[in-house]
Length: 301
Image 1 (tube, one colour):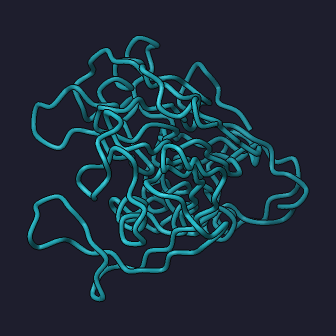
Image 2 (spheres, rainbow, N blue to C red; image 1 turned 180 degrees about the vertical axis):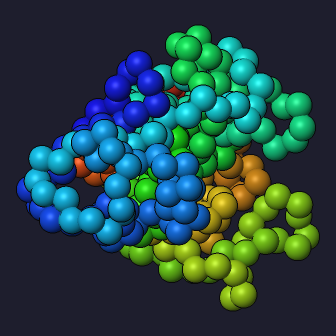
């Protein structure tokens, strides 16, 4: 499956596993495209088979040539501004970058331009690629690492569903205060807002379900720190920070949740992002290098 670089078309041939399926079945049952987006594609006559607009219910034999007008010239939605990040993976459908600590994922107020989204808009602008900046998930301002963006509405819808179904795997490395006694544990505690603080979250019986799997990697008795790996089954705001603070092992450097200020930020890095590409079915695995200067993690790996 590939983009025709001269225009808006994404082209592919119907594979044998989809023999005699209709466009409607492919969109609805295989790609699970939301109804609103399916309606837009239908109204815009955005799909052709063998260069013809056909009835979406018609069965398509293997090898039928499909064209989908999904690459649109769009406003970025944010102000382009040059900024630093590393590209970990990119094609015409999505982008995975390594976010440095100290910048927001996207603007939180009107006119803000010093975010990752602004830097990506500038990057696209320099390449002559004009698409809305669509983050699939976020990282806190002072968390570094791999973060995923979609380049068009179809990939965004598919990646968003995959995230909700937990088929996008996110693995974090963290340095926490104290020596964690267990080699592996699952923290299953709901998280809600802290009504006494504007940005802080807390474990709360009335909060949203939150599951964090923690695996201990190394313990450093002299520094009273533990290096751990975390994986998320949910994506609540500040989830890892809240859960680790709750069990008595706040992130080193995380002053908001009780960590000691031994680093300039909370020691949390989104190390790996892995998933099956929604359109090419390629296995994508991105490892995000450490970016901190002075270094935070390297001494403990």
